[in-house]
Image (cartoon, rainbow, N blue to C red):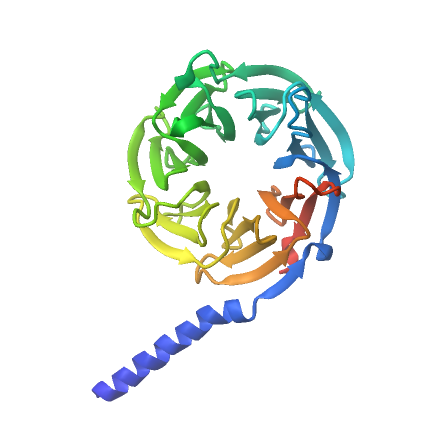
Length: 352
């Protein structure tokens, strides 16, 4: 009786193991030549998808030279990737967040420590909100990420300061003004759970910080993997139905899977160091960009096996899904010394 049970248990475990690992063994490989691409220019960073206009916005900072501070926002046809318009801004643009209902594209101006508001109907700048206070070393930082909480009318902006003096700026989107400056958080990336009234922040010191979505106050902060001091978390994607988050780390290998309530590390998805991460609920897939490896991973969110990889000619950076979630757009950056232009990659997910 015990022998029979043991055999059944062993066979069951073996079957599960083979099912999990078969995804990695038989993962299909693609290249960016299998999909549509559009060259843009130098210094392309984050993307936003506007469903009402069927447009894709790409923020860029064409130059880092001291006397060339202008930014450029590309407006593309989301289907053909044809460049509809090149929108000039006085400040260089990096991060983006779209408020489609109110026709506002928020643009993070990293070098100037500010956020520019662009009217997506007229493609004209509404205003620029200065966040960094260059007269005060404790309130001086570069904008890294901007994430919108539509329910609570807040825009969260991470400020990367010198000597680990990071800032969290909270912008009131109704007043279009800075509401709070929160110190000692060292935030880098965000994800908003509007239904749960939570904001999850990842930091350059390997922390997961939970904020109250109603007040922006800190509820919890946890060192996810204290045994490894090399972590530098860049972004997090949420799977709220499962109660987990997927963290992209630019310094160390593997995408980390953490319990959102406790901050406990529950799994490592084997992969190169990563930049951006997006979760697709309907397909139950995780998409990750690995900039240094010139690779994009498509991961099964149940087994955590890599289902597919897409090799890119240059460095994949940011991700955004279309409104119907059938298309994944990726910004791909060239090496700084390369003559080729950065480009946008359009991945048809129905091919998988």
